[in-house]
Amino acid sequence: MTEKKGLLERIDADEVVLHASGYLFEMERRGYLQAGGFVPEVVLEHPDVVEQLTREYARAGADVLLAFTYYGHREKMRLIGKEDLLEPLNREALEIAKRVGQDFPDKLIAGNICNTNIYVPGDQETHKEVRAIFEEQIGWIKEAGADMIVGETFANLGEAEIALEVAGQAGLPLVIGLSLLQNRLRDYEGSFVDACKILKDDGADVVGLNCHMGPETMLPFIREICHEITDGRVAAFPVAYRTTPQQPTFGGLNDRYLCCPDKLPVDGRSFPAALDPFTVTRYEMAWFAEETQRLGARYIGGCCGSGPHHIRAMAEAFGRRPEASKYSPDMSKHAILGDDHSLEEYTRKSESVF
Image: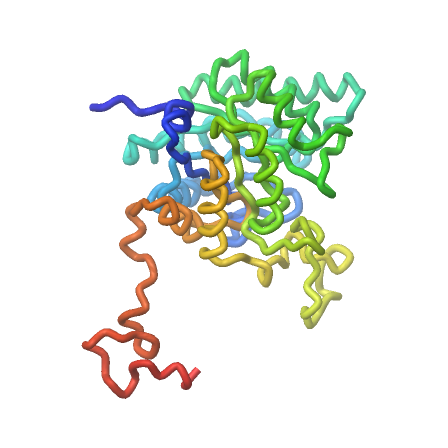
């Protein structure tokens, strides 16, 4: 059996590594996770569901099988009074990814860490707590024999630096996704490009942006990063929601056509449970994949809101044909829109009926 190529080996060979981390919102949509706390209890309550979604992403062409431990850290478990389930949840999530990996031996197994929501700039006590959280999770990732670590949604450079230091001690390749709020980091006055360069200089293997911004509003920022970081080790995985220059992050999306804004749980906000009308199409995610690859990024994918159909479209944008491409759209046999000779002449090309 040929030895599996590692993360950096792939990127340095100018291959794109396709990432899928839409687990949180997808599980909420399917009724297995509660919006608000967003704690991935589903890993223990319905491991078969997590395994199935992991397989769907793999069939769609994702190169990385991500253990679903996003928000599966001590602080989140404390909020729901289930700190005793912290280790079982993390270990089970990693085992699920490894089980799927047995059927997809070319895929990379990744442990997942993220923002802790307790980091406070200048507060050394919170920094110690953050470090302890990362040490726990990265320790389990290391023991599970994962190929790499993905760190997501860091809005504070200082917190990302702590994650980087702990991951470095484990000796595993690390992807770090920063998240910009109002086009900047919360604790850093410099540019987001400089923040990425700092992390890379300090040892991060792949740096870039994830979450908050959709394809259209993230792309200009990736362009700036790729202008400065030219070795391909740039990450870009946006949310699958249509953010705009006027509403650049999905937390600020507002549906002016909504019939019943009084029904929304928080101040009429569409985020996080009424984002449906803003979901981007698979074609927009494919466009983002093409554009970011052209700019030079080589770690590309989808974050919140992205489903397997988005990931498949991105894989196909890279010229691939994953297993799920067997079922990619083909309108030639559509009863009304198709032009296949086997269709009845009466129904063919009858767009006007719509």
